[in-house]
Image (cartoon, rainbow over all chains, first blue to last red; front, side, top):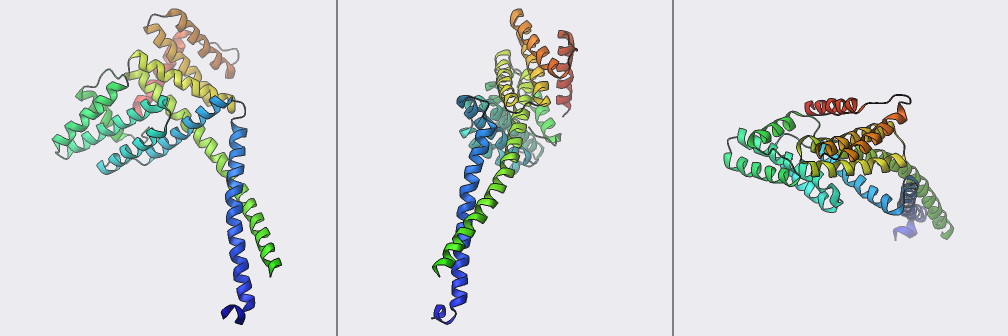
Length: 162
Length: 145
């Protein structure tokens, strides 16, 4: 057997395997403990309820910002962002839902504009309607075609989509 | 042989703990800063947009949420950016109360805006009009973005 013929190599390999496994275990445990400890320190000036709420809001806002960073002016990218945001919205606190609805409305308006430019008038009308419905749900007063076109153009021109 | 394995395990655990601690410290600092910056940016931008386009009730609730988040962030890590945004948020709230003809609420909100502004500008006191103009200027910049 190989282990009998090469005892030193076998011993070294087993030792290395144990070392690697224990390094991973130590790494996972210590990151978890330190991360929780840091979170407690960061939120130490707040009571439990506020700390938890701010933690949820902060995480949702961070996910929202990272998602917005990746939007490109193509229908596929905008559509992907709408789906991704819908997932984040589900786990976000309800008070942030209007923020996600506004982003989705902007995305639908952008989709409509891109489809309009590509000659897909049917698709554009559908997405315009979805944008208008979302904007109305968050209290926007002007959801006319012109207002939606302005919103879409501004978003398409803007490098920062937030 | 047993001794070799035990030593490997102990060394592995120690290396993992040191490495994990270092990574988590750096990661959590970046996470805290990223979280706070996004919370400020997202809630402030949203409330400014709602102020410009939505009806009073929706705009007011967006501003109240922004003010709540910023006050919590300011309690955790006091920062000029939060105080500026708080002053702006209260000025917007005051303007909404004015549109709704609630003068007392508008006065209280303008006072709060003045208090937050005064924390970094001792001795300087903004008038209600100056605060309204400040909000207008910020909205013009946001509109061009």
